[in-house]
Amino acid sequence: MRAHPQDTILDCLMEIKRDLDPTLAFRYSCGHGMCGSDAVMVNGTPTLLCTATVGRWAKSPDFPPSDGSGSRPGEFRSTAGLGSPQSARTHRTETKGAAAPSRGVIEVSPLQGFTVQRDLIADLDPMMDQIRKLHPYLDTDGAPETAAEDGTHAGEHLQSPAQLQRYELLSNCISCGLCEASCPVFAGGEAFIGPAALVSAARFINDSRDTGTEERLDAIDSEDGVAACQSVRACSRPCPRGIDVGEEIWQLISQVNGRRQQQP
Ligand code: SF4
Ligand code: FES
Image 1 (tube, rainbow, N blue to C red):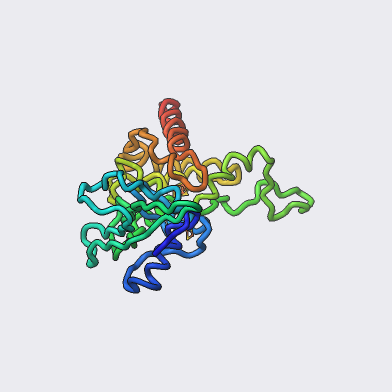
Image 2 (image 1 turned 90 degrees about the vertical axis):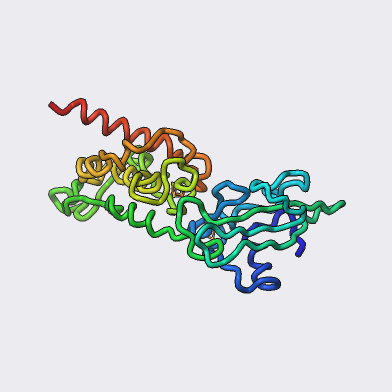
């Protein structure tokens, strides 16, 4: 197959599935970086298939394969992870330039840190379970704080632009798992609740309408919570929503520590 530099890796995989290998399994939905369902490793980096372009990721023929297997240039390699019932697959691709076509290698593998279900599909349920554990919904004690006595604003929870700004970006998290895959501590188990769950907790802790801050801080003040974070901050780089994940976790750590110091 031939690919243009502006084609996405998702485009390539769909073409491979259509024309070369109908059994190849991968996940996607929106195709526009909005749903987070197509997170994989591209050349060893956590990335969304639908926003990663061939031009950006095709390695030059001289670039050595990351696994040292000596693969040939001009190959599109989708590598199933450990435990997958499918074996590694290789498909040839060419990056077609305007004047002189050049070949490159793109290595695609399932999102690291998660159990592989098949080919490029990783089981993200552990991450979703961790997010659910921290109650990812607004807790307002059922009483609208801003309800006026005359009932003008009854049922509304008014916020200033500054209050909205404190959590608005965090509410854009699409639970893709890229931050988890880049975290050297998170391994999909119980040892660390993971950056995605902590971002979800921060989203509600920073929301002026939420009345469950103490309970939320209690929930993350544990060995598998903020205490497990090593502040490596590798989680910030791949976030497709522009969230500085490491900084948000650092802010949570500061809140937890500040609360401890105030306790008798
Ligand atoms: S914080 Fe960013 S990288 Fe992590 S799950 Fe949310 S959108 Fe994905
Ligand atoms: S398919 Fe939805 S984010 Fe890529």
